[in-house]
Image (cartoon, rainbow, N blue to C red; front, side, top):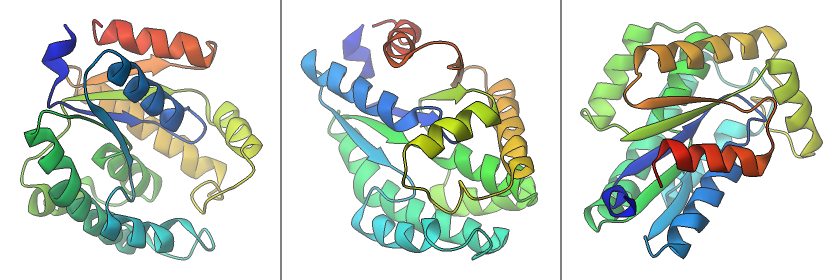
Length: 208
């Protein structure tokens, strides 16, 4: 079953503190140990240009950018990331596993900042031209639990400084995305299970 993952694009999504980075890296490590070439990447960032844009996106005050500016910056970074890193690796048969992708824009800028989802879809279509992940894991937990976990990391970004109501809208957005895309999105409740248990659940969902 592992062979069918070659050349697949897998993304991890969810609010703050859900363990996306940890689970992305665990899956990469597992696949590589099984002889399947896999790489970890992240958004915003991932490519040289994307990482430059990331610096201005995640630092500074919570109100540094409005929703539209964030949207355009996110998609500028995503375009560079997709064209220069993700697609070339997929063509080589590498499994690309990304810590966030376009679902985060729908959840954060759409639901969180209340931007028009239709406007986001227009920018998405112009930028990605229909390209999308093959499989998406949405790691879900309460906002309170997520922020508590995020705060324990020490280093905060400007999105973590957004108000609780913002993060509640983001969570609602991710739940709606999962509901609307049942074939692509796998919703994983991470509120009551540890890191290894989440990893095992993800492997089971992938049938590996």
